[in-house]
Amino acid sequence: MAKRKTKRTTNPEHPRLPVLKTYKMFVGGKFPRTESGRHYTPRVKGRGLGNFCLASRKDLRNAVVAARAAQASWAERSAYNRSQILYRIAEMLEGRRGQLIDELEIQGATEGQAASEVDQSIERVVYYAGWCDKYQQVFSSVNPVASPHFNFSVLEPTGVVFHVASENRPLLGLLSLVLPILAGGNTVVCLASSTRPISAITLSECLATSDVPAGVVNVLTGQLAELSAHFAGHREINAIALDRPPRSKNSIAQSIRETAADSLKRVHVYNLNWARGENQNPYLIRDFCEVKTVWHPVEQISSSGPGY
Image (cartoon, rainbow, N blue to C red; front, side, top):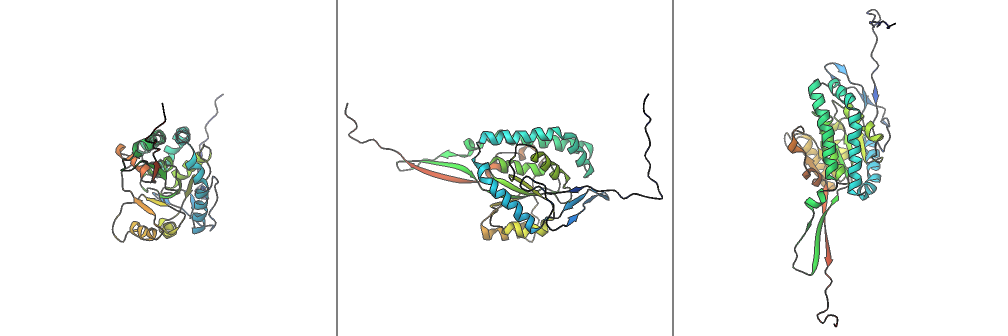
């Protein structure tokens, strides 16, 4: 006998307050709450998305410590192994495709927009997984020199990168910069979209149960204006990826550049449409690498040579 569906109604005389989910941050492979105890509730069309941590200066320091501790071992892994790990991220996202689409719809996207963004995000992970063991061949070189030496230029990771994620593409924009940063052997601390942060936390859950080592990716939630001076001046952060359009000389991007100059950080400001295919390329990997040049003497054979 088929069960009858019971229609659930709300008693107008006793309206119930919705219980919003509390989302934590992702630091060092764990999900801590902010040490400050503060949170905020972003809204889309009047609907609260949940309670999200307002990361403090100490939360930022903890994330940088985790990223720094993980960076050397991540850089020492073979390029092929990093490729395997990134591909595993694509597998995890594929398994949560439906959830990711639903969450993008909750954050204001249409069904078609949400499905397109999730599919492009998964394809982007596969794209950069394929570049992990190839970008060195493209950008490294053997240089001609006028002396008896071999001269090689190769790319090395910059180190710890702070990434401010896109507000317009909460999943695709985040991955479009995190992936080339990881492919180059760097570790990353991300500040998720402040208005649409759910996708970043779900991505963190995928990373926590994948092969990505703890500390390689760390995700904070909060306000850029509150944290910008702290990460721009932090001397254990080697580069900054800022996904914001540069508006004027007095913009927050300019302020970050000026503060970062004291510790010689590279600050890359991106204003790209991540949905366009040409905006995925190995040059983004090169942005977060340093060029190391090695000189090696050529062994010279004596002019007399061995006797025959």
